[in-house]
Image 1 (cartoon, one colour):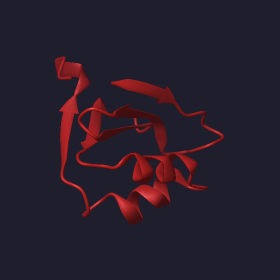
Image 2 (tube, helix red, strand yellow):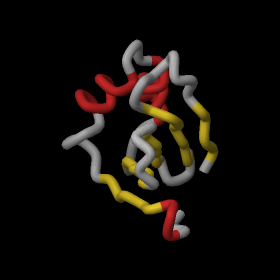
Image 3 (cartoon, rainbow, N blue to C red):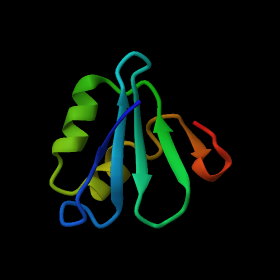
Image 4 (cartoon, one colour):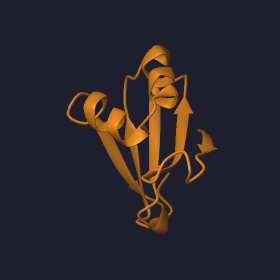
Length: 81
């Protein structure tokens, strides 16, 4: 998984976005301080690119990912990948 850190001036909610092109997984890490990563499955490269180019990452995530893609949640504090 390749992670890209997102500057706080770019997003108040999203701290980092990850991408695994082989498994078509887009992952999101939030600034809330919670140790969870959310991994959205079967996200096309085009959909991923629209997300990272969005004016508002949080709004785009809510409108185009939540309730549209299956996801898994992992807990970094427990060493889950």
